[in-house]
Image (cartoon, rainbow, N blue to C red; front, side, top):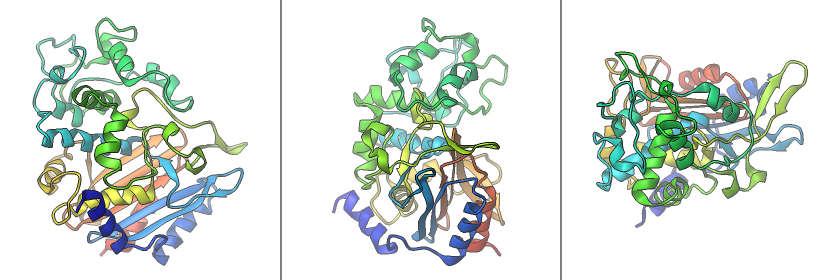
Length: 366
């Protein structure tokens, strides 16, 4: 049986679309009552099964058009865990080695000018320890002024930004301090992973993800680009103004898109989480051994593994990732030992901590 058939069967056998838990519905309704967020999409997995799947509120606040579980939300930096999966797919295929110099996989050279003999590896990009920095003065025009899909492609932007002959290049784009390989969050580093996928496979990053991740998992409302989605089914993103309330400034888009531009529905994303957490007994896009390498049994002594971070809550350790963008807030949290997970998408810059903690306490609190 094909992967997509197995994962889809597992999905429909563990949830009826629209299934929800009343206690979680009540928590969601309380948040929506603030009128600070138009819609909330929530998925909860318990012991490897989807037990709650809902999208409540509006994908278009002004027109009062309701969102549903197939509405695509931009998930901001939660996108990075999908970029991580793409890289490990190539690791499994023997096309990428985590500890090899990234220049073996790129069409132009990337070198830290402060440490010219240093080797930047794929693993360091995944772990935000490459020494590559984000220049917020350059990114501000892309991140703060939504203008839809980027006009500049991934290759051209990163070459301009990272190659010594590039128009955007600055030595400041690389760490210069003696501890330059310590953790420093880098959107540019994750975008570079997307370019590695393109150069190694000779496919666009979008096409590779569609072929190897989204289509096998039947993620039909998922894409890195608006142009590939039904715009009427994409949630608009809102910022809060004291005088005008919720304002839609436009759909986000930027040339470093593998770091945060993915749009997906809560239904689609649940299929990805379901397959990932059940990879030990269900065929998934990655082998269970690979999933375990990405997210091994967590320990307090380390700070996460390959893109994910660690979060402690109610005496449980979770792998987690948050996302934030203009008009966007998202979070995902997984317990790889118990096969539990929570994912929340919001189409506004809204604090999700209280809802996340409320759901976690409802499900697994002592």
